Amino acid sequence: MPPPTPEPFWTVRVHRIDIHPGLSGLCVGYERGEWRRDQFVNHVMEWLPEFALKESELQGIDSSTLVRMIRNAANIIYQSEKFNNRGEFGELFLHMAKRQVFNSIPAISKIYYKTARNETVKGFDSVHVVEAEDGLELWIGEVKFYKNIKQAVSDVIQELHDHTQTNYLRDEFNLIINKVDKNWQHYEKIRSLMSPNTSLDEVFKRACIPVLLTYESDAVRQCSACDDHYKELLINEMREAYHLFSSKGLPEDIRIHLFLFPLASKTELVTALDGKLRIWQQL
Image (cartoon, rainbow, N blue to C red; front, side):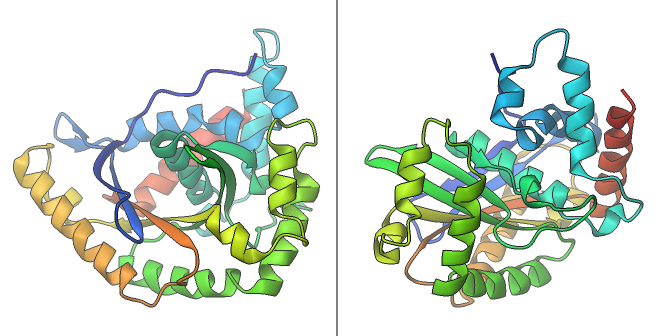
């Protein structure tokens, strides 16, 4: 049996699926006056096996293989001194957000697209499916693990337009379906949806692009507890970020859902994540 899914960690401060784009605002909260950076880092590590390992490897985890599989997952992410420039942590956050908020099912990790150690991966940052009431949906995501929300919005808007061009989508679909395990329970449905014989008009009816943006938050840094004042500041800040994003001329023919993840300090978070990951690599 695969390892159990980690318990939810984020508090979802805002969740709107009745608007376009949709919005979910994620919060890690405080403990004894401090933003819960280290607790969040420990939680992130719990997701490593699911994010980095193949389905067949997850199915094979037991007490005799657990440590080795955790070490393998940590090594798959990256081995580089240039960790401040890496996007893998952001991809992992997006994976976690879709799993926690929408109970998505991973189709394949973009880690599998790497052809050489420490190579960055272009294209969509995450490929999941969601079992909706009217059938299976394809969730192909984008993430910007940034300090500045304006820069994050600017860069992701350009990618959203580039990545929804017909030729680009066809190339991505071909790459994705060739990497999906043919024994996966949803393989045939995804293969049919991504087939070149299926009109993109039909694909867009069954697809969503989740976008996760991080930013260093004044609300997070000014407060030390999840009291009413903090919640008001944070929700107002998220509302402004949402309006900035939604006003930039998004692609109109596909559903988009925005995840906002405010940080106290990106640099400190990345340093803590990198340190913990290197410990796991030595298990």
